Length: 405
Ligand SMILES: Nc1ncnc2c1ncn2[C@@H]1O[C@H](COP(=O)(O)OP(=O)(O)OP(=O)(O)O)[C@@H](O)[C@H]1O
Image (tube, rainbow, N blue to C red; front, side, top):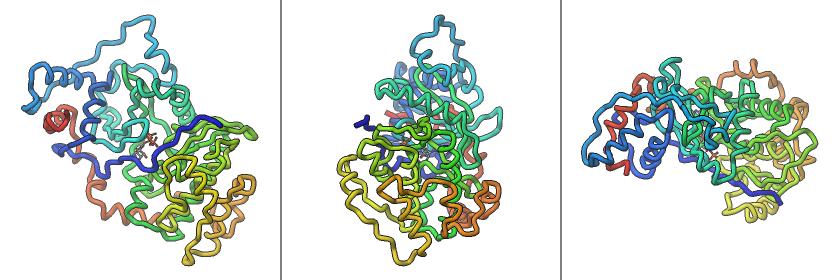
């Protein structure tokens, strides 16, 4: 049996961006403080502010705005191991960032990293930056995986995949930057519940194209789930989080038990051998949930119990769904990976996809009314970025130091 690395089914995603002057409280704020304190190249100015706060006993008073001092260029040679270990995927950027990036808010706290929303002042564009503490990477023995994540994301270029903007390292953190998406499928699903079949058909076709593309490149994603599907401004999807992905050539097998329990195929839960086909099971779970508003099998506490539930459960299809969709779900949620749908031509001729063009450009032209409607009614997410254009000093200024302890 392979190593076990299971993730939680849901992130602590912050549903609305934090505005300038907004309150940050509780454990989330604590996360911010420790994050800022260790942000190395990007937030070294903040680190100094925290130090100042500690030594001058300013806990009860708001911090004064202060200019961000530039971090001294790296002069150590040879490069210390704490840096060289993460090269070349995470290059050192001594000056970049602290002058150009401004934190706009906290997006989510994943199991590996914290995702921040930032403004790149030079490019005048908003990005999401995943910040991963190096110490966590080393403690959890995920160095190889972490480098693989970046190297895979650099290689990929597909309209429905979230491509990598940049990656670099500070002294204590790794940074992975991508363009920012204001909505993810999980949040949309939580707000809307079951989706109409027309929307499911479009999402499914886009995901089929992405998964076929990845598998043809010899990449297995291993964490296909709603939280890892972001939606662009027109509602089309972008698969993200390649943190568990790996290169697996056609015909090769994997054994590591990893993924998010509710989405993991039986052959993954049992410790393999498994292949790219496991991603199609996850797609089945995802489509079932989008259709019915609930997961085919409730989450269990560990992979052993989850396996028992998955094996013994015959997911009942609601009578309200069409036969074509029911057939698709059955064929994806097939216990035997060899009998599971998995090739593009399977989907192209499937009755559920009758008339669907399996072409990214044509799919992108189709409207996703569901998302547009939801975004229209959401409050903060649709506020223009300039409204929360705060810089680091004002963040520090606006937050009560007590709430950050
Ligand atoms: N570019 C982005 N724009 C907006 N939100 C994002 C972006 N990237 C990630 N997120 C949000 O942050 C969440 C966590 O990111 P990600 O999955 O990369 O971190 P993680 O630590 O690997 O999470 P986990 O291991 O728990 O899946 C995502 O599920 C998504 O909701």
